[in-house]
Structures are given as C-alpha cells and as structure tokens.
Amino acid sequence: MTHQLRIIDFGEVDGLRSQTLWHALAYGVSEGSPPTLSFMEPTEPYVSIGYHRSAAELDPEVCGAEGLPVYRRMVGGGPVYIDRGQLFFQVIVPATTVEARRGDAIRRLLSPAVAAFNDVGIEASLDRGNEVVLGDRKICGHAAGQIGNAVVVVGNVIDSFNHTAAASIVKAPSVEARREFLTLMRRFVSPTPTDFAAFIAAARKRYSAALDLVAVDGHLTPGEEEHLARLDRLFVDPVWVHGVHRPSERWWRAKVKSGVWVAHAKRNGTGLMVALEGERVRSLRVGSEELTELIAGSETVPEAVRILGERDSELAELLSEIASRPPA
Amino acid sequence: MESYRGCHVPPDRLYDIEGDLWVRFEGELARLGMTDVAQTRMGKMVSIVFKKPGRRVRAGGSVATVESAKWVGPIHTPFAGEVVEVNEAAFARDILIANRDPYGEGWISVIRPEDPTAPKRPLLEGREALEAYMARIDELDVSCFRCED
Image 1 (cartoon, rainbow over the protein chains, first blue to last red):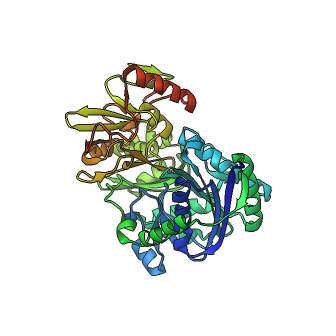
Image 2 (image 1 turned 60 degrees about the vertical axis):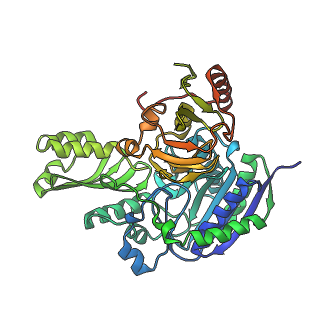
Image 3 (image 1 turned 90 degrees about the horizontal axis):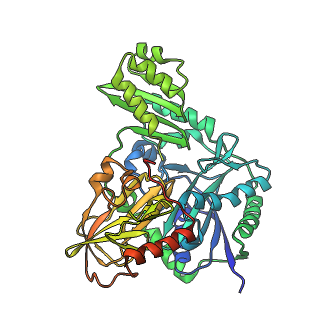
C-alpha cells in the first residue's frame, strides 16, 4: 500500500477559517486521516494568540478600533497580527512519527519548507532557534503543537507585512517601548514577495520527499467537517478567546524573533526599558536622563550591568535578570 | 537511583512508559508527574495550564498542557477520575521546576481515580519498568539532561 501525503489548498478563506480549517485537519489526522499538508490565504486582518498566552497582552483600543477579531490557536507562541498577503501552510502528521525531542521534530518539519523557499529563489535557512531566516531576518512565523494524537507545525510565507499594525496590537507600557518594538520588527522581520503557487508546488514536492509519502490532492472528510463546525463556534466563544486566568508576567516583554526582544520593568518606581539582540544591547533607557547617559554606549549586557551597578545595584540586578530570561 | 543514558527511573513509583508519565499512589489518590524522558523531550518549559481541582478527566485525557519552544502539548492521565490538587504554585515560582526535579517538586497533579485498577495502559514498576524504559529510550534515541546539568 502506498502511503499518502494529503494535499489540500483551501485558497482564500476568511480569518476564522484560516485558523479553524487546519485545527479540524489536526483532529482528523489524530483520528486516522493521512498525514496532511495544507495551505490557505486569509482575506482579512485579525489577531492570533498562542494557546497559553493572555488576551490581556493585546491592546484592546487598537484591536477594537481596527475591528480586529482575536482567535486563540491551539499551538504555541505569542500574539501575532495576520493579514492579506500571507500564505499559511500546515504540516500535520501522527505524533508517533516525529522525533522524540520537540525541537528536533520542529526542525525536521520546517526543513522542507526552507527547501521550498530555496526552490522559489529565496535563500532561506533555519537558524539555531528554529527560525526560518534570510540572513538575520525572520521571514516566516511558526508554531507547533500536539492536538490529539497529531502533531502540527504551522508557518507562513509573507508577501507583504504591515510592521506598524503588527507592533500596534500588543499592549505596550510606554510610547518608547512600542517605538522600540516597531524598530526591531522593521529591522528583523522581512516579507519575501513570492509567487504563492510556486511555493505551494515546491512545498508539495519537498514535504512529499522528506516524509517519504506520495502527494495526493484531497479534501476534508465528513468527520473533519464536523470538527470544523465545532471549531468555528469554539473560536468565537469569548470564554475560549480570553482563556483561563494566567498569572501576570513579572515584566513586559515583546519578542520580535528568537533572541531579539524588548522588555520594560520597574524597580522602586524607576523604569527600565531594554532592547536586546542576544547579549547585545541595542537600546537601553533607565530612569533619569543622567542614568541613561551613563550607560549609553554599553554594547553588551554584562557591560551595562557593571556600569549601572556602580550607581544602582538593584536596577543592575533587574537588567541582568531580564536579560537571562528571553521570552519563548 | 536507577538510570539509563542519563534518564532516571526511580523504583519507588509506577510508570506509563508510552505516556512518559509516573504515578505514585497515596492512599486512594494518585500523584502524577512527567518522567525524566518527558522533560528532556519537551525541553525548557515556558508555560503550563492545569485542569483545575474538581474537574473530571477521562482516562487518556489531559490534566495539563505545557509549552516549550512554541510547541503546546498535553500531559495525559492514565485514569479517569477527579483532579483534587495541582502543583500550580510551584510552577508559578519556577516554571523550570519539572525540568529540574521531575520526580519531586515538579509533580503535576493529584487525581482521585475512579478505578485505580483500570489504567488506560498498563503501569509498570521496578525492574520491569526500568527495562521497558531502557527499550523506549533506545527506540527514541534520547539521553536525558536536567536544567541544572
């Protein structure tokens, strides 16, 4: 018997369906449908938040004013702004067929997508943090999870990207923090204009080869249609969107890509805002202009901690603590 | 401590080998946690959401979901029953507690099994558990490490 990779290209779908369709497929694969590679293009903007994230991370005024629906996905990662001009792909396989370590499984299930990027002329690679990058710029968001007995890895091809809108949906503690987040996003997140049909053809070939399965066009099963109807209702249920109570984070953090993020915190009434690229300090503001001047030019976290520590050991300790805990 | 390829398999409890889960009976209650293999496969945890005390769970259902490296996955219970206690406070203090101490402070939930003699999969103990886990560790090709290593 030939083992199949079911291919489903849903084409353009509304925001809700761009989430619920692939969740329905995951339940289907969990219940015995063949491994599946699917594609879809959302026709409208919305916000997607990770399974474990709090809706309180979002700026309600911005989301409300823009009329952006919020959908909670069943895979990981943070809040993301999704819009037209993005092609989403999902690879869904039985959980028993992936690598034991999650990081290894994600890497293997993203590698064919990287090869497909290469096939369409984009010199993408997978960095050590499992980000799909072009040079040092992230070009594909991804997330993963186990839904029932299926593992799903999702990613996207970004033809166009509104950095300002993407930065605005996250509730920021200050104008400076939001500005810094936007600056980093513009620097480290890039669209890669691509012929979506060419990418789909390349991904079909690459995933089929990597999984040693024969690509066959398919469609939703009746069981998956039932899951879809249930998920369409679930994803707009306010209880689902807001989720369970989650303890507040100790400080505000916004991730741009693996290793690059902005954080804001206060200690004893003094604010600290830092933008980090690994150990490198891209921007740092602490309390008064005088303190900020003092540490200006610090290029690394240890250097900034040392200089800050000479004036305020508690703020130096806070900076060190923030830097040691990059967001997931 | 019994161990294989760095993966500890303490002999003082039962194991759902396929589920990478340990079970320790405490009277009519069962304390559940991830094994060393489970925390190694997962990598550094970044988030956990528990099924709350008072909730009923089915055998093979989820008592918690954990996230690491943008991956969300369930922790399954081998028994149907009621959740009576969760280790939320410990994970709130240190989200890596199960990565550091999966068999101690990093336990997940305590449930009251409806029928402790009817787990979804057989629970193994002692030498049998270790040998089964050794085979699984080889099959998965994992070597365990803890966060403090």
